Amino acid sequence: MLIDCAGKQLNLSQPVVMGVLNMTPDSFSDGGCYVQQDLALRRAETMVAEGAALVDVGGESTRPGAAPVSVQEELDRVLPVVEQLVRELPVPISVDTSKPEVMREAARVGAGLINDVRALQIPGAIATVAASGLPVCLMHLRGNPATMQQEPVYSDAVTEVHDFLAERIDACVLAGIARERILVDPGFGFGKTLEHNLSLLRHLDRFTGLASGVLVGISRKSMIGLLLDAPVGERLVGSLAAAVIAAWRGARIIRTHDVRETIQALRVCAAVLTAD
Ligand code: 7PJ
Image 1 (spheres, helix red, strand yellow):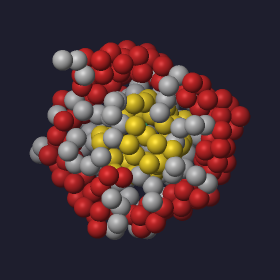
Image 2 (image 1 turned 30 degrees about the vertical axis):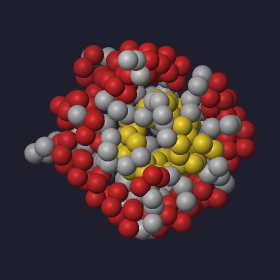
Image 3 (image 1 turned 120 degrees about the vertical axis):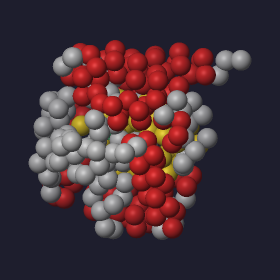
Image 4 (image 1 turned 180 degrees about the horizontal axis):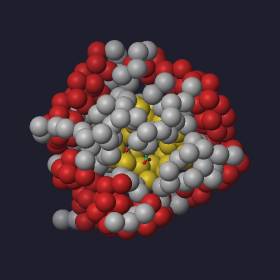
């Protein structure tokens, strides 16, 4: 199962790791240490050396209550880095954005995948991705990042998230984005309680037939913190357990801050998954 990411191939025959590169000064877990471009490049090189199949560059903080970022500010944060990473790294560079202008410019400088936590709902986003020819990850988010953790309510979270993603896929296909270019993500922590997140992880196999593959981002998130009563810096082991469960339930891309450890955990998982 190969996905073409602007000329670089992403092989999803086994679960792979997407390394997170935050370009936000207020990122909750990296504390903005990689805001400078050379540090960002070195961090990305390390993640690729550790085995990351993709690097995801983001310039908008989507943590609960984070302030909105202007188009220009987001472009300033991510474009120079994306341009350099595309040139210097062998893996596809993904851009975590919801803004059509950022998608268009990222595609122009060679980005290989658009990762949108708002599932291309901002006007112009679907047409921009369709025109770019790039693959896209559609994520489910209930509400918006500012308000999403204010008592999210579902009658059946798994079905509602599934049906939302199915509708977004239909809209994309109608606009000319082939199903083979679409990945889906239930959006752990985006407008969900711990119970919702746990149901989504347990029933992740419900999402595997929707499009080309399932991507999950659980790394260091509050669902791990709540289960372990642990601060962000002490969530590695819990995040690895969740990554293995996700891969076991069919996820093909694990988005993580801890590339080396996650790849080790996934290697064990993949060996068992492919055993007789
Ligand atoms: C996710 C994401 C996720 C996808 C972020 C964080 C918050 N993109 N961007 N899925 N999370 N596709 O890294 O904790 O879960 S930003």
